[in-house]
Length: 430
Image (cartoon, rainbow, N blue to C red):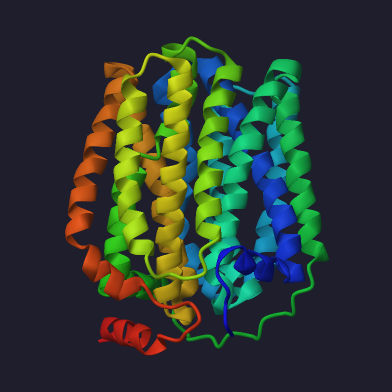
């Protein structure tokens, strides 16, 4: 099938009914996610006034992905993606209810918040790969590039609406009712998933191997596929030393710029605007060709915006640099995921996407913990500035490998260059 470029590709993707429903639920759910996230960040700071605790809470949210991510990928490859998504979304709804109830009843403290955050991380460890993998099922290989970009744009548009709504709600009604609004938004996605009409997947042939063995096969595939391995290496560096900025923004808003939750909402909202612009640019592309160059260039933008953010004393300039960082985060991350989805063997898609999710979620969590502890000792500015310098070194290294990465990963999503893709994958299986 010929896939048009520009906005025609977007229209063709939205013509799919199940994808349209998915978009409605995904947008609502992720707005609720950011409402919940800003409330958790502000509640953490309010309870502790510690950047170290901000980092620890962020780490607790992501560490289950680090520990369970590869096992979750094996589960996704064994199960019906959509049934698993429905189950985990229902569990997320229950968790949102507990978070709101405990806060409104006045029993919430930092340790209970830590436990609830860990529980949420366990649920998301299985929800995220099923949510990412089901996109391929909804649109097929022909439209995977614009669909992933649209998905990222939708997710990051919530970075604008979610923080703005969350900041307003915290000021107006407090964190407890803010969590309650998040619960209602998760409820919408849970209902939408029930309205989607997706035929049950054919029963998958059981290999007789254990989940651990199948998870290990995914690790072997990633390490042997040279293009995917290098993409994940780049993602590890940016996830550890750049993306934790988002989790440290409550500290910057309160301590550096001396503002309340409205200041945090502005920083996150600008962050989201930048991400929307980046995602919209990618959504208008219909081809994978050229994404390697875009990915690498945005590492440089990321490094520059982080350094500028770390040294400015002007709040509104910081908002602009936050927007630039948001743009670079989404463009680099979305291009990275699209390249991996285009090159991966379908039978291993769940496990490889889980490896991607492990790095994309676990890296910022571990980085937030490291930078948060460092910020408690050296202030918030120095860790972010050093992270920017390390990203600059990553850009220099990636530039030296750009031609190889393009040859290994830039596979035409229409399958017209399928022979090239098969050659790369077959090499990994030897």
